[in-house]
Amino acid sequence: MLDREQFEEVDWDNVYAALELVPRMFQIWACKQVMDIAPTFKNLSKYTAQERWCPSCCRKVEDCAHILECDEEGRVEALMLTIDMLELWLQQESTDPGLADCIVRYARGRGSVTMEEICSGKDDKYYHFAVSQDKIGWRRFMEGMISKECTELQSNG
Image (cartoon, rainbow, N blue to C red; front, side, top):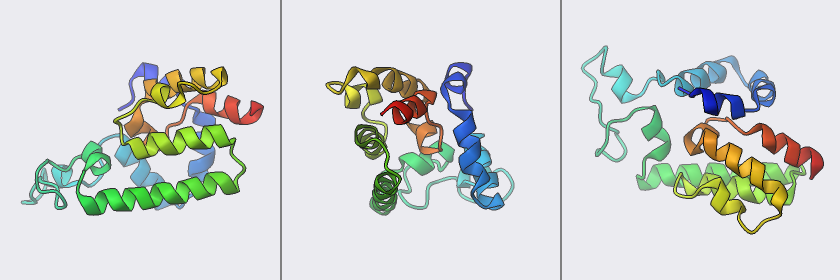
């Protein structure tokens, strides 16, 4: 779950606006993912004889965090294809090019690089966004939690 510091950084108005546009079943899945109660093998094993191990990598327990972090080739490839689609969508929506670059690089970094590292050397206007997004973290970012500062950058871009 989000801690208080993370919670206060999230642009909840835009999270709500985005979720309002998607099908109800996706809304339910997203809520369960963020609350760590999505139907992963770990969670299903509490109620059935289901194995807890990730069926893709067979090395780690499949929990909600692992779904995003699994380094099995097929899952990573699927994630990268999704990030490619995100990049195209950001371009189509006329997202500030510097902001779009930061978002895509952060997503592709899979938690190995901070937003501050990505934004270092860029215009100072990215600093507050980077600090704020790093408080939220990569996992929560991938679950749709984006900093309030992102809206400021896009509005003032």
